[in-house]
Image 1 (spheres, rainbow, N blue to C red):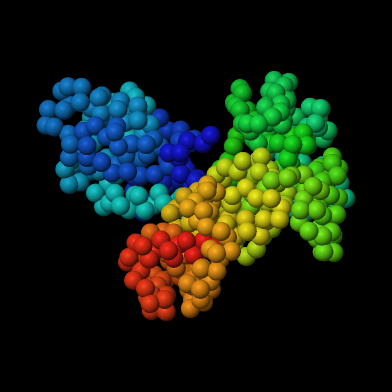
Image 2 (image 1 turned 45 degrees about the vertical axis):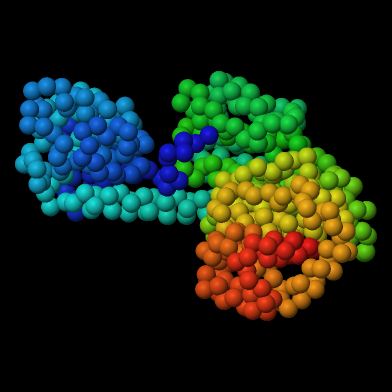
Length: 485
């Protein structure tokens, strides 16, 4: 798993920051390694910054914390060693307004502990250094996104060629600068492309492929390993069919995982239909539905008896077919629909959906095929609540409630009579507002409207219903009614 302390933006080479002529930075101690990178800039005048560092920082200080007699003791050794222990990458020392020169003992300590020491001239502010770091990060991020986008396009083009599987493997190997291998269900290499790997790397990759090959509940979809400086990765293709994609590379750029994931999705589609009749079964189910068959009659063709519906929304941007397919593969179902800014996935209940990085998910209660429409509504409501409370995944509550003690026909008749004055939009606003305990801002987020619009709608609901919505008994009765289908 990636270190949660490392941000999703690419790190910045320290050499690139030193090359900025507008900053005038100068390294005066420590090793000059072109591979040294920083993840962010942080300013601190604490004598011991260790508790406040996450690792990967360029720590900036003007030396306010340095006592007068620091040069004659172990102060600087203790200070630098704590920075190194915390994972600090470099130390920037400002020459003004406290010190005219960098203390010699600090220079010596940085050389001893191999911590790059950067002299910051008086004309350069610490905020200017931090801004330069973020500018370099933004440039690197833009370049990385462009590289990933170009790789996605080239992989999609390769998948449309007459020999799609070898073409995708060749394109993936070229993009990651290594080797791509397709393993069959029996563990044998079916196809490979790219630079030849050494015997040790090939053996390790074959073992890693066994880790992700479906063997029961809890089997991971992907795995990574590093051996003798070589990066290995493996992806299980499809839902339990046994094909595995393996990748060998000398290094790992930030976007390589995304590129390989796209290739895994394409290879899942290319290999899945040859391995099983799932594609034909789904086609048959669709035709039967179009010709008027009931959902419960076609569900056996899809391979499940009890189901959940998942509504998912990406944390950034709108979903595209490739991202939706990748989400379906991660959840373990090919039954994926992209509808506007929401991806819907129909999933057998035994495949328990979990949180997915970069997505917000709403999951319905377990439903029979005849209840798919209701489960779809539940998943939509769960997604709205997940977005409102900023949770990665919210499940629709399926435990028995007090409302279940009332005959359904009586409950529905009462709900229709009580809510008759409200339009569907007002009823949905009221339901969402009550579900979020009267939170204006969270309701606005869930409904994608302005908070003032929420206030106006709730006020109109109160006027049309003639009820005091601050009364908890009234809220309880309305919630009872609004939960009816």
